[in-house]
Length: 410
Image 1 (tube, rainbow, N blue to C red):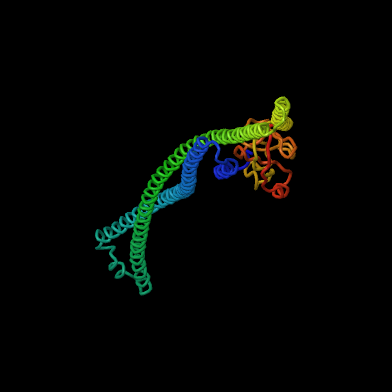
Image 2 (image 1 turned 135 degrees about the vertical axis):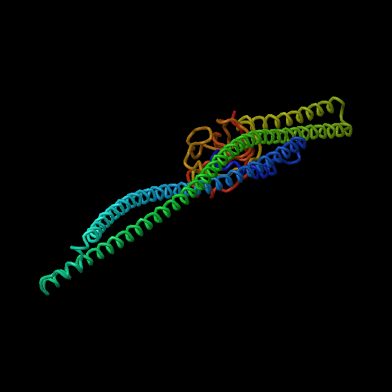
């Protein structure tokens, strides 16, 4: 049956050959042994290839997982670069704003400075009449003097405050400009680091992607070798089935020859015994000849009758194939594995009481087992081992393993 694993056939074939083959056909037995050894070697190579495929699939899976991780890292780095670029652009705008404020402060300083210069210049140019001292001394009374003194103080304080405010503004703006420039430089450093990380991850991604491609190619090559080895094992199994059938045929032929030789020997012994009895008799020659003729005719009739009986039995049941091992299976996953519930190797639906599996004979071959006719519709066992289909696993287990005479119905 197709549904049983092929790789269990070697042990089955060896056991079947040991059970169905006696000492007949030593040359054929040697061929069977050689074929079994060759199939075992091919099976070993197949298992090695399957282990290689499993290992390559494992490595490929690890590389694919790492590839997924690297791809996620690339996405994260791309987002990080975008964020850094946004921060850099914001700092650039902030820097331009600070530089504009600094320019405005410098313009304000220039205006204040020009105003102070004009006042100082005016005071010096008109020191004889309009100096601060002249203003104080020409006061009409104390109240006017105090007012003028307060005015002079306010003007001086104003100039001083404006100067201090300008200096503070300039220092603040310059500090802010320096800070923004430093932050911008830090962003540039982060961008460079992120860019380097991205390049490194891209290189690892490319290398890992190439690893995955290499593993895929190696797996494809190994699977091709696996298919070739499976085909070779199947061909070896067919050859092995043919050899087992040939050995069984030789066994039956040898048994038949031995039976014929035994019958001939018995007939010869009977004839010799009759001759001795004839010589010992003192009766007339005619009577002795009659008795001898009757005895010989009787012996010949007995031999002929035995042969006719054997031929009659063989023809009524079909061609005798030998005493085969009979087991049972069903459509469950324990018996059929991946092919559970499927069709037979010949494409038919397995049916209890009709479907059997055996190699070495064509699909559709009719076999008589225990008086019932079955049809070979499946594979999975060697020639000489018939696997009978049952409707349930419990029925197949209950049937067990039996050895019975099997006939091929003509």
